Length: 103
Picture 1 (cartoon, rainbow, N blue to C red):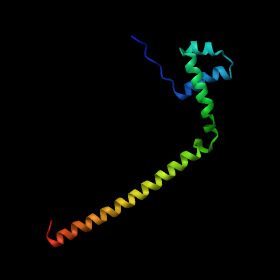
Picture 2 (picture 1 turned 90 degrees about the vertical axis):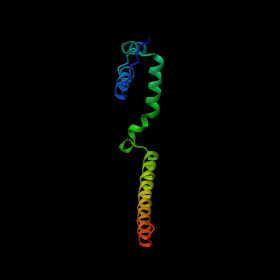
Picture 3 (picture 1 turned 120 degrees about the horizontal axis):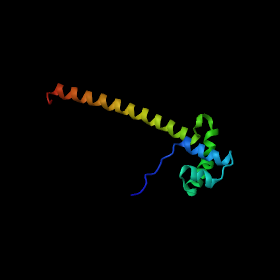
Picture 4 (picture 1 turned 180 degrees about the vertical axis):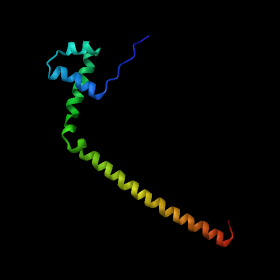
């Protein structure tokens, strides 16, 4: 049977990368210490550098994410307004049916 994989948290991944990048421990040694494939280590390193700019953005959010969240909030509010109007129309419809004796 195969060995179950260990899942590393983002903090653990950064700590492992830190050993190599800052403490100058060889990749082979870091991988051996943590039971990692060098391919996994280099993939983490690539992701780390590709996504590192996020840490320097205000509140850790990029403008695209903020715009999407704002649009989502606007659409939810618009939908809530429409639901309210539909509820009022349905209440009027039921009242009218009762008045006409069709209930």
